[in-house]
Image (tube, rainbow, N blue to C red; front, side):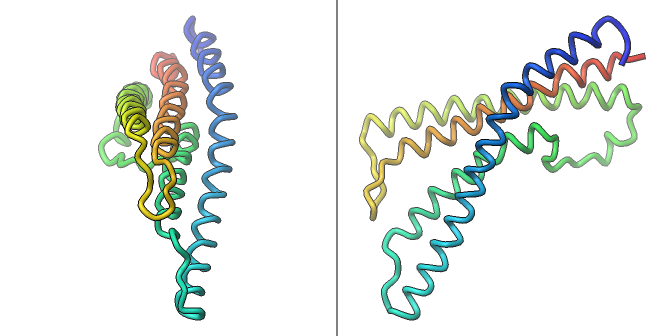
Length: 174
């Protein structure tokens, strides 16, 4: 990467990664814990249901909440590592500079989409908190889990924004 923008792109990407990477690592660990909790809940529920004829009360509710955390807390790592599913049948035929520009545009559009999801989720969480909505069986408040969805989406935005400067530098490299 040469040219006047190379230093700016690399430093901007490094700053974004410095913020997003630790958050993504933490959220990925939490997501992994949620996956383990879901597995343990399922095993306990099945054993209780078929061996003791007593299913685990609220197992489905807890699994649903864990699933929301698992999905939305894992998003940032996919954005940071550029490991999300990409269909590149057409883009792989582009020249490398155009591919880099396309990556920057895709990251910007993705950041906009996930920003919208974060905003609407936070708004929904606020309304749910105001109403005091709780889960049916365990009476857990729903708002913290919806706020977690908003937070995971916001971290995805950070991860995607961090990819844009480096992609722009690659697109303009000579």
